[in-house]
Length: 287
Image (cartoon, rainbow, N blue to C red):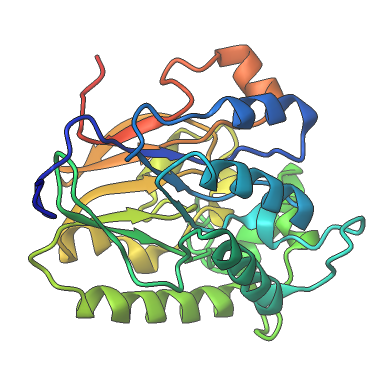
């Protein structure tokens, strides 16, 4: 009989983000996602959709196919669109999303971090919810106010400013600081002998935003408060999305995987050269 800690041949830890299934052209992409073994796990790193019914439909589909699904929220799930029957805002909306996921058997940032035992493991897979605090500022901006003013002048303003509400916090940056502090406490308490896969929607370091076509957008992409998590803690891989620039990079010797699908106008132009699902473990370097 196979021992519990023996890697199961062929099983994979996979990841995807930014499915945006509120867009009809992206629905067939989500419907095509399938495991290659009965033991495959799937990380869904945010931006499944905006409306609750679309988030539920997509996560239910994936949870029915993969051995385990782990979800971290993106900014789009946290929006409160006018047409959504669920008009919860801020923290209350996030809590309802967590409740939804738990009902589907999907892991969230509020749950214990499960340990993946396949080849390249064991690793604890940690879904993260960190948000952003406008500290990835525009060049030359000394304050959040200056950075936002420069973005507005350039006509580059994230829709979050209109649809993502921070209640009960005064601002998104306050909510971000609270999330970072709580997550950092969990990371510090984690058994350091078990490496981590940190999986969240926003990149933990600023460097991935350096290639954005519109640098003003970086301020909605993360926080400097997480810049050293990949070196302070025993991190095997970092998974993120949000930027819609799927690629593999290394910072301080740690692998970062941007795993987004993106909007139809983007993937129709570039295709899916990295595939729809990114294999996080076991790692297979792509030339």
